[in-house]
Image 1 (tube, rainbow, N blue to C red):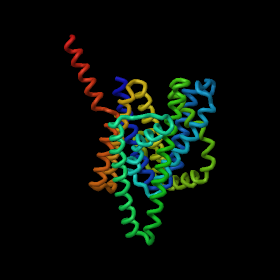
Image 2 (image 1 turned 180 degrees about the vertical axis):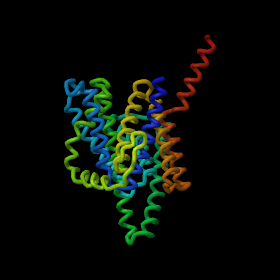
Image 3 (image 1 turned 90 degrees about the vertical axis):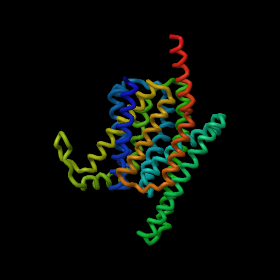
Amino acid sequence: MRPAFAVGLVFAGCCSNVVFLELLARKHPGCGNIVTFAQFLFIAVEGFLFEADLGRKRPAIPIRYYAVMVTMFFTVSVVNNYALNLNIAMPLHMIFRSGSLIANMILGIIILKKRYSIFKYTSIALVSVGIFICTFMSAKQVTSESSSSENDGFQAFLRWLLGIGALTFALLMSARMGIFQETLYKQFGKHSKEALFYNHALPLPGFIFLASDIYDHAVLFNKSELYQVPVIGVTVPIMWFYLLMNVITQYVCIRGVFILTTECASLTVTLVVTLRKFVSLIFSILYFQNPFTVWHWLGTLFVFIGTLMYTEVWNNLGTTKSQLQKEDKKN
């Protein structure tokens, strides 16, 4: 029951979170910092109350290690959200972030001296080709749209290129953080809820450097049209409603993934998260009518198949099926 409930939380929370993020970004493309701050604050307060026991509980992992992890996590979160302000469309944002497998493999080879099978290298090649196709086609769209609506299309293209650079940096930093977490968990044991709290609580002072931008967008949010919240009937500026729903759905998404990691194998978690990304992508394209060509679909298919190949879903499903057949014969 709990795994099914967790899968429901992941799909409901993560998919709706993407919807509210796109609603925010379409109205105010530069709102990434206020969104990141709201998400961090909500999860930090919840963790302080229920995980840290109002600060009375000692952390299992020393704070100095969390400080390193938090620096990376804060940077990744801010850069990922800021990329939406650099001509990066939401579908490309989602597809590009699916390249985490590539980043993990590259850093795994360089730092951990890991070696992989030909099958895994092939899957990574598929993901790489898929991301390249989607990125290349998006670059052509940015150039053509800018040339018809702006005097300087090249400037818009450079802005988009900066966004791609930001996403690439965040991807590699996220992979490095994953390797650092892996080494910490081997040394101190897994403490996912504790890590979730400290990853969101410790970076809060860092938002002081982004305070002016956060304040400016808070003012813009206050000026947005009024919206009556269903059921409770309270009237609030619609942008604040979108932000609140984004924060709540982000929490539901994270909780769903946490339950899934404690109840299911890592393969299942990877598969569910990958399927969720695919569903979010399709919804973003259809509901928001984001430009998506046949080439984009081909690139997405490559990314999806490559991810499934990497997780060896078919091999594991075949093994499970044969084991069940053997058990049936014994009975």
